[in-house]
Length: 291
Image (tube, rainbow, N blue to C red; front, top):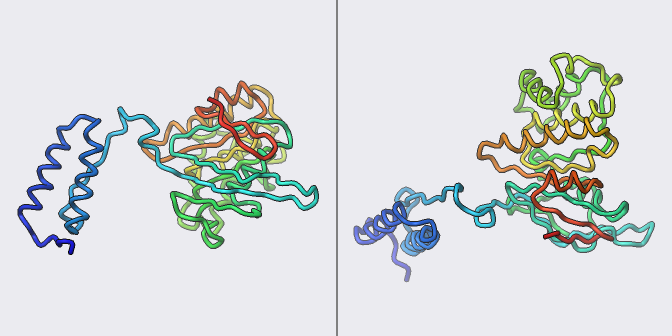
């Protein structure tokens, strides 16, 4: 029979001793002491109010030990009946907090299909997608997309001004608790090298680079956790491409402890190297990681 915590001074003293040792422990020993603390508390069924919080500073730890899993995909298969081929072949993939992932590969290899599958924009033949270790079901997809945003190569712009486009998401039910912040939008525009007048421009007058910047600001103002970028600079000139890169980097670096990550599909090997810490290659519906 498991003993219950009934105010036992002996048990409490043991937990106190573990915590004091933890406070002065080296980094290598903290992991072991956290396990002892958890075992002690669970074995004696101590109420939460009597448990000491034990957390680790991220300052000196390797990402592999600390990264939080954001998206986990298992067994993704996408079968195309028309061509009678599997566009995705039982893919497994994990995106962790702090990941900057690039995906390259030849045209038609399945890069965009993979990204749209992660965004749950297209139906899968089989496979599952998890958000923070919870399976995303049909009813949970709108909430999932609040955290995970897909950026297409060719942005869809509404009639009206840039500001009209930026205000549109706040009319949707999923963002009914948010309001448009013009000053925040202007700060994002400034990061992409655009002045105060940018929000007043008509969408029909925007260049390809400006339209992509507006579309990216429309997403970033909603503060997503993950960006899925589907060749966002493929049709842009080098200057516009660098502006998009700068905007994404600014969003990522401004996390302030929040869990953020992105997956960037690109045909540009130099860009993939520049914008990533992990580099994956897609070939005929399969993924491999470059080391």
